[in-house]
Length: 251
Image (cartoon, rainbow, N blue to C red; front, side, top):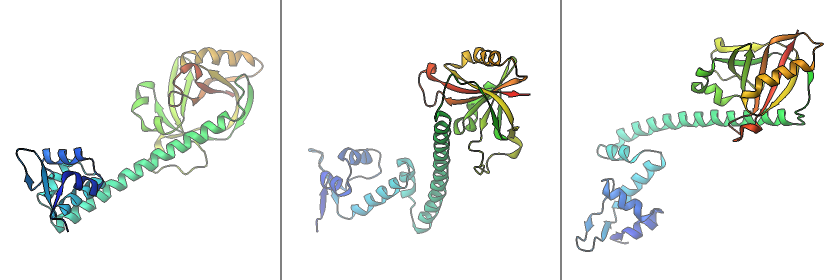
């Protein structure tokens, strides 16, 4: 059994970069017991393996070096259990947050695949929709601070000179997260809608709404245009390639 390890041997034993051990030494996390002042060579005693194993263990649990340094000065079995409980709670919180993000990604994928399946950008048609739920967000200055803007497909409501936003709770049959207050959930009532598409940046949306209305002068249409972002800034860097589904209620 070896009595001492060089820094290279210890790094190889733990699968670490030598520079990592140099850094641990410089910040006082893990230092060699012996050091040659002339050559700078470091020698680690065998029982220091357990110290480094503790550091590696805590790093794998996600602790920062500052947290490791602080906890190791007062580490005992009771303290260790408290640390593990706290870390377990934090990991579960992070895990739930990652699950929420994954759900948002999957929801976005399903929405895009459904909307892009067989799409014809020149099509103008009347379609029937059942009730659709959305989270009310409000005016644009509130949009970018709202988590639901990032987690759900965006709906933009145009009515005269006013524009306001919502987050489409797609798909309709999916159980809603309990974190969404019921008071914020609104419904686009079922009915027939004149439907078309806008290709390009959002500055041109009002012109497309006007052309959509002019395409069917035989229909009595509502004042509000409801626009669902299909390809937006989250999936397309060139706004000329944005695709928006546009719907106006048939009265």
